[in-house]
Amino acid sequence: MSLRSRLLIALSTTLLGSTAASAGLITVTSYEMNNGNGASQFTTPTGGQNYFDFSYTKTGEGAPTANAGKNGSVNPIPYNGVNDAPLSGGTGKLTDGVKASDNYSLVSGSDGTISNGFTTAVSPYYGSLNGAPSQYVGWKYQDPTILFHLAGGQAVTSISLYVAASGSGGLVGAPANIALTLNGIPLDPSLYTMTSAAYTGGNPYASFTDLITLTLKNPVPSAFSIGLQLFRGKLLQDGYDYENSYYDPYSGFHNSAYLADKEPWIMISEAEFNAAVPEPSTWIMMIAGFAGLGFMAYRRKAKPALAIA
Image (cartoon, rainbow, N blue to C red; front, side, top):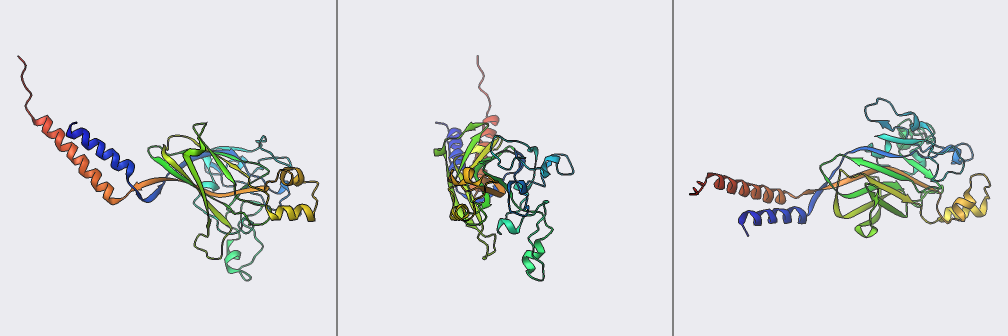
């Protein structure tokens, strides 16, 4: 085997086998989904909050698209087949860099801005949040699907989702499972792992957000469109208490949550796609290797060619 071939193999091994000192974020150029649900799905008896992607703006436009402020379902009992407010060709709350750590009810509102009822006099922290953009998109009685398009030229190694945690109250729970597709083709579940951990965002008193990490066993080109379908988890104690203390014939809870044994709401604050960044030592080895290849190419070019009679 030539020295050049051995160097190429060594470089490839170094690139594929190196550990990552840090992770770089891959830009989401757009994502597609049906908008979230809200007050018409009985968030509270008084009307409640809307968990829409209010900031969703199409690429090249200066203001949110019309569907950003519309409910993803006009029916009081939504389901996956309804697509009343499709969003495509842009980005919004799920990629705005804001990772909620507080309870979903404290960082949401009816019109896309936070309205938690606190004043700064009563609670300087929560009162100061009022008027800022709300931080969650949520779906009720559904297993929402989101299709992401990323900037090319990189390799996706993991996906981070910041979701409202189980135990947040109000019939909200973290996804129990997430299915992936690549360019519309389902990815075998054995090719990725899913882990979950509490996320506080640096606030030791916050424990209402879970960080779900999907780690790919093999890097995926960022040129692929990546689809995520989030599946609701098992009904929690708040759901059983709700059923036993208050029979609700209007919102569909009995049939769509209690009998289905699934927590009604899934809420997402942020989605991130991570690419591994090689350690400094890896870069040194790569540079040295490429320098060696360049030197070999120079010697080969400088060597006189043999004349053929």
